Length: 222
Length: 222
Image (cartoon, rainbow over the protein chains, first blue to last red):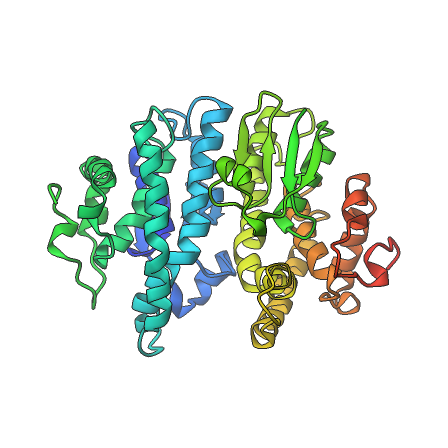
């Protein structure tokens, strides 16, 4: 059986979970408490991060971009990266913008200060770091809006990994009520459609003990 | 004419430059002073980062992973990501380990504190941040050594984007004498072979005014 090691509030784990569901790839999901540095897990991935995907033949796939590109190459029934080189490059540009830049500036500070510090018993969140992160978010949302003015989906004319990736990050921020949806109607409308996809369902029901999302978090008509 | 906008000490720019040379793709290289936020450049890439690759038909390719995957898809004569899905996943794992984790922990602090602060006239380097970065490097080098004990190249039996990526980051650190080569003979041996490839030549000759690399930096027998 294929296995995905993941953590509920890790945006990269969410990205791979959504991809697996969208591609209808049968697998088992296992929560990995990666902050505990379990030695059997470090033997597979010395860096100790999630997600890690184990194939049926037990080959491990490590680092989200290696996993997502692998899934796209190996499971071709439902392509999620576009149908030509230019579409794929645009989807990947958007993925990297969110996975690398928005993650480092906004999402990483939020989950490290609010969640990982709590799980690692490292004390209180650094509010100055959190505030700096929140100040960076509106600009990235503006850029998203500009894209959604031009096309229905972030990667182009079709739903793609770009939508999955951005929705993964936004859903983590939304768990902590960090998105001002009413100021961002175009993004809200796009996110509402993604949120109602069957692939998103389990992800919205996941809870991490000690953290309760706002009521609108699961609401499809928020 | 294809154009690559780059910066000499940006490891991601180096990665794409090496790829273009290894694939023998005719192009022009233009230094982009991205810290000056030139408006014509921001029109192409709102995030303002390098590298940016412009194709012959003027299509821009933005974010290094989107560029490298595009080059691999569009220029297939000399594959640099392995010949099957598992080889490619392993090469991509190593690329992401260095492009995301080692970059954030080691290379980014070094170039931001030493170079970008100087170029942006933001004052003196933060020595505590630099020291924290240096402390993280030996562990990543240990992991590299473990790989080189098992196979000749980082991605497997063949030279690949994994070698290009790691060499790009190490070459930037080496510009600032941050690699203790004598403590790392296996990595030194591997890097010496990469360094002597024709694709590496111009990269080693580049200088950024205000920063002089050590004598061994260009020496092929260092």
